[in-house]
Image (cartoon, rainbow, N blue to C red; front, side, top):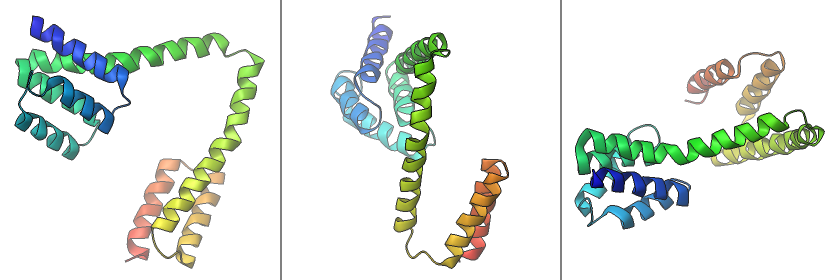
Length: 171
């Protein structure tokens, strides 16, 4: 029982003190290697969580928890990893729910909209630059996609169709 409580505390602490990714892996390494798992087990956990789809931090939690205390350990480590962001999101949601009718909040969101739009344009430009030469085909596909989006086509369908067209167009 002490081992399960220690697992819960470690993953709760790691997810409160880091933003996941490489930062959490370094902190987790410091917390568990030599105390709960070997370095070899930890390296296997990092490799496996990097290959599998999904959150690396949650997969690391389940792997380390399982290595330490079996299925209950994996479950407890997962709960310790999920609890901090869940509580934070619930808190923010409750605050925003109470403030949703406030005029300043709607003005704040209206101010965010153009900034996020510009940010998305810059990200798209960077993706285009890293993709290599931009020919007329890329511009045509982008403009057609934009026009279709203006007519309220589902974004997922537009992206999927553009990707399929790209497979054939950019061989």
